[in-house]
Image (tube, rainbow, N blue to C red; front, side, top):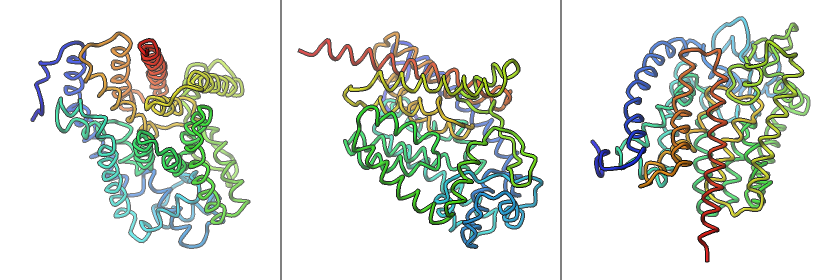
Length: 417
């Protein structure tokens, strides 16, 4: 039941956006429901990403942390406690995260899988609750709309099905938004530092806030990051830490011939970032090394342009949203479930647009591309080999975020006495 005034009482293009958003939700939920029915039975038999987290927790319990990143040891534990498979699904996280999953390792794998799904659902509700102050306009359209947008986002659904940890980072970043709004920069930095299990996203965010001279945020990030690094080093030791770094650098490199190498090829074209886009477009024309140079160069250019544009400006909430979007584009590797964090700028931008009585050109286009970013991951169900194309609307979203924020800042300065 609608709360507040009816949709038709609003004017401008926001009416069409509201109608489209409400119209596509049933189709998205139907597709996700079918996916759950098809995937979950297989997942409970060990065919999900959760197997790596579960087996790593068992390794910690058995005091095999010093072998956490060894292929043969991971295979032994995954075969023993999950299911026998030809290849290993590699554990590429910092060791401290495996420690967090030890309580679930006391359950059989199927029960642990559903328990973690329940934890993720709780975290989704918590993230929606944290962002509630910035979703009032969406709630005016329909009371349950802000909450339903979270499970309706396909990367979030994938994270739930796979037993991935991306929803944890989504919740940490949502809490960081709230803390920054309250000028509690130190606490926000600590929260983002806790998300270093997704270092490819947490580090670019922290680096941008460093460029923007948010020193208390950076202090909190360094503090929590240092503590977690020491815990990980204590669990694994120096040799395994070096092995961890090497395994991270090999992501997307393909299948290794030796038993010690991870044998699961992680397709870069499944990454919705600049690295995936460059490989997807030029992969058949250029050498792999040339593609790597182009991808790194493009990511560096985007990162430093965003950093320089907002260097020295007074901090606003939109700055952190821009940092989140930038981190996705310039990340070293990025899979479907990792895009879950994009939901934070999506819901805040859509809420702001719905609440505007008059739709300015820049804000209108920003709302359109934001809605496109919400539905674009659906290409996963239609043509997964072209998933890298999702990076295009994300790149346009970043451009429009920067443009609209710059225009509003200039208008504020112009109107100031």
